[in-house]
Length: 275
Image (cartoon, rainbow, N blue to C red; front, side, top):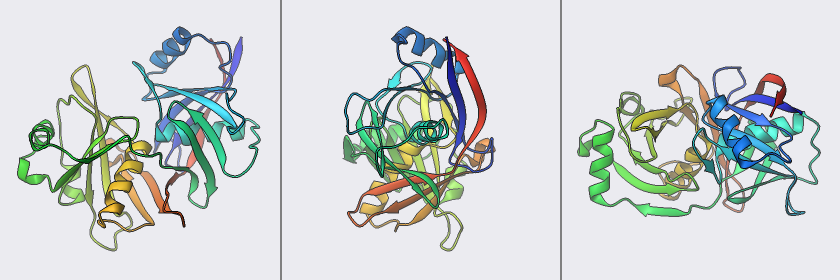
């Protein structure tokens, strides 16, 4: 039967300049095989499927699939799914909106910078072992001395993040292969429109695949860099520059110290899909 569908560009207000996510708005009754087949067919970094929540605390439930696996949480699919759900007539029970996903309940709220999600807690944090830092540097085509610092920033996707001297160094990275999820970040000069440049690489068939704009990585990197005093909130990060995108991720904190990650969302495709 036809099921309502949206393709939403996230972390941008200009269509085709952010990171797209495919959203099937009524996935009730679909099998795991049907979900996996459609996610493989869209060939986007993530495809999401909206389902009734299993807890009264949530407004809706979402399953997040890449072409090869299911994720417990991801940032731009969270914002894109919420945008599509609201646009299709979803009515939240309160404020904030509550999304149920594999990682638990994620709060989403409307802000002046677009929809924002509360960064989930890190599953793994702390320093990266020195042999692994050297390995990551090699994967990125860098000398070990180019890595200023490195930290585990795993919030579902198993990110390890490296800090380079500046944004130009981040933009110059040209990996050919990676064997783990790597985030790269470097600061822009003080007073620049964006505080940092961020890039995200994940392995696919042994090849480094770059994600245009990555909410989960920005959320976990923010927790690291704010905690260590390298950045102060609010700030804006840039991502996707090398790919010809112009992603903008707005990071802020609330009075409780929670990190919120916001960005623009715009619908690019509307219709129905047969599954």
